[in-house]
Structures are given as C-alpha cells and as structure tokens.
Length: 235
Image 1: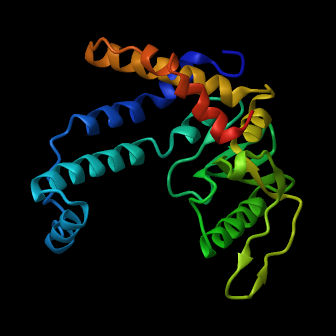
Image 2: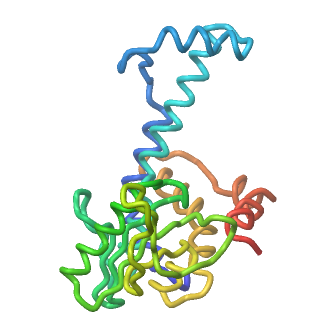
Image 3: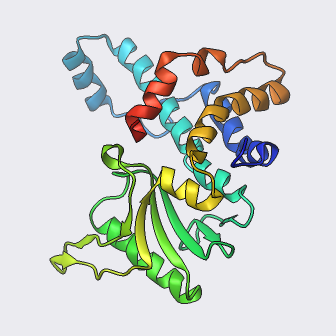
C-alpha cells in the first residue's frame, strides 16, 4: 500500500471487524427491546408474508444494523493509523486532529447522515475546536459524497432558527472522503487503494483470530466491487 502502512491499518480496524463478525454470529433476541406487535402484524399483511417470515426478516435487519454500528468509526480508525493523525476518543468535540497538517475534522460516513440543525451543531463544534487549535482548518468530512462529486469548500449550513446560512469562513470547510484521504496521505487515489485492500485485511483478521478459511476473492473479483466504488465516486 502506497498511502498506508498495511499492518498499522490492520491493527486499527481489528476490533471493529471482530464486532461485525460477532454480530453476524449472534443469536439475536427480538424481544430484548420489546417487539412492536402492532407494527409487525400490519407490516406482515402489507408484505403478504407470514408473521414467522416477518420475524426472520426483522432479525436479519437488526443484525445488519448492529454490523453497521460496529463499523461506524472505521474511517476514523483508518485515519488515526496515518502518521501525524490522531483519532480522538468518543465524546470529544471532533473526531480527528492532525498537528502535522494543522487540521481538525468531524467525520461522517455519508453526505446525508447529518441533517438540518445537526449540521449547524457540527459547524459550531468545529468553530469551538478551532479556538483550541488556532491556525488550523476545520473539516466536515462526508466520506460518501453527494452526486459523485469532489469538493473542498466553505461549510455554510442553513440555520433554520435564524432563517439564514451560518457565516462563511475559509477555515471551516466541507470535503468529500476521496479528497480528504488525499489531503491526509499526500497520495492521489488513497481511498481507492484502501477500498481495494479492506476485504483482504478483514479476511486476514478473522482467519487469524478464529482460524476460519475466509477469502476476499469472491468480493474483490466481482464486477460489482469496482462498479460500486465508481457509483459512489464517479470515474
């Protein structure tokens, strides 16, 4: 890997990968948070399926949600494996800080993850972080961008209460994931490199931990593998 130290990245994502594996193999109890018996019966009728089929479907949905939560911080973990970049603990105003690049950042997986006044809160969090790190630039990172675009521009979300956009500041910016990885690593195509290597790293982690015989080939050799990346980032 040109942009990353492979073993450092592997170590950084290991715990998240193991949580995903454990979620996949867990015996999920649908009743642990009180099953909505009204919703389940109505949705079963609408779908034209039995209640037993609905419950199986719901179990699979909840397991998938648990998996997604488990890998929710994957990009922050990878970024923290880049020299000169620190992945801060949960509870801090921001996710990423780099003295080397004079950057602070809040990282979201998708462009529509944060909406409305939550975007306003991100702006204020970045502004507050910049008070602590004068001379730095604050980034709101959207790993999966809107419309396959690359952008690095001032972040001016609309404040619904004030009925206007927040002030434009050159040091508070919104950036897509592809551009941000290039900024942190100095390597063009760093995110594509990471995408290509991740399935292989995941298989290695699980094989070493559980003595499984998993392989990434069925994923990386599929036409959909590269197609899905192009649909997210263009090209």
